[in-house]
Image 1: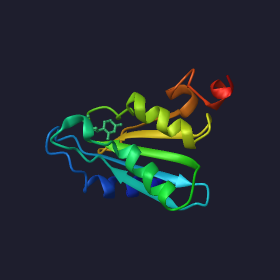
Image 2: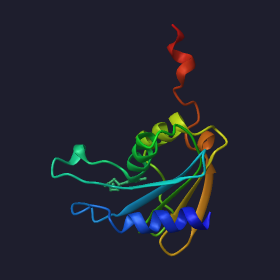
Image 3: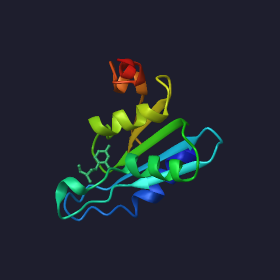
Length: 130
Ligand code: THU
């Protein structure tokens, strides 16, 4: 996962977080092997800000891929950052339950959970059947 960590750390440098001053970087390995990355982009109208994971997912989909095999998220927190609820649902859309998400600090502390454990009981397409 060193390449994913490197990509997440690099994109984190570009995070736009003047309000929280909490910079986050995320990287995904698409099923093709290509790495996609994204950072958080805040807005003065606070709810309009977007998370790093959402940016990485948008980059992947824009490039024509709709599944990933690994994810890495890094922030300047004392403990490994955990994705917000909305991002857990977004990750679940494009990664299987067994896909691992490594959460990390900039100092190298890491914690890995799979998507199924991050979002137990996820809302999924099976509910749309009526
Ligand atoms: N944030 C992310 O980008 N990803 C996470 O997993 C947690 C939170 C961002 C959103 C906001 O810009 C800042 O971190 C503080 O919540």
